[in-house]
Length: 156
Image (cartoon, rainbow, N blue to C red):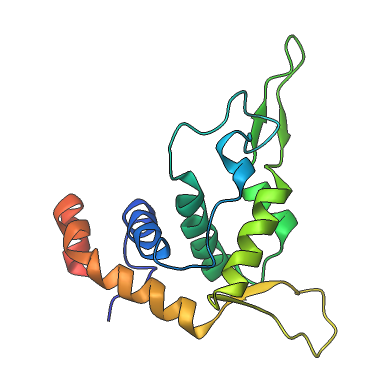
C-alpha cells in the first residue's frame, strides 16, 4: 500500500485539501479572507480556498514531524522578513492560524494529543489513526499522477 511518504508533497496536499473540504469542522473563520499569514508577508493569500490547503499541509507536517506543537508549526510556515536596509530576519508565521487549524483538525478526529506518561519534553500533536488512513488513501489515489509526473517513482 502506498503511504504519504511515497508521493510528492504537492500532489498529496492538493488531494488532501479536496478531501478536507467535506469535513464540517474544518472551515475558515470570517477573518481568513483578509488576514496575513505572517509578519513576513505584505498581503493576504490570493487563493480563495487557502485555508483547506494549509490544513492539508499542517496535517502532513504533523504526520511526518509529530509530536509537534503550535509554535513549531508556525515556524515551519514562517519566512524571511524584509527589514529595509537592515539584514533580513527569519520570523515565524501566524500562531493564530496554526492554533486554529490544529484545533479544527483535532475536532475532526484527524489529529490527537500525545499522551506523554514518561514526562519527557516530546509533547504535542500526533496524527490519529483516522488521519493516517486519510493520508494513505489520498496517497494511494494520487500515486498514478505521481508516477506520470515523476517516472522514477515506479521503482518504489
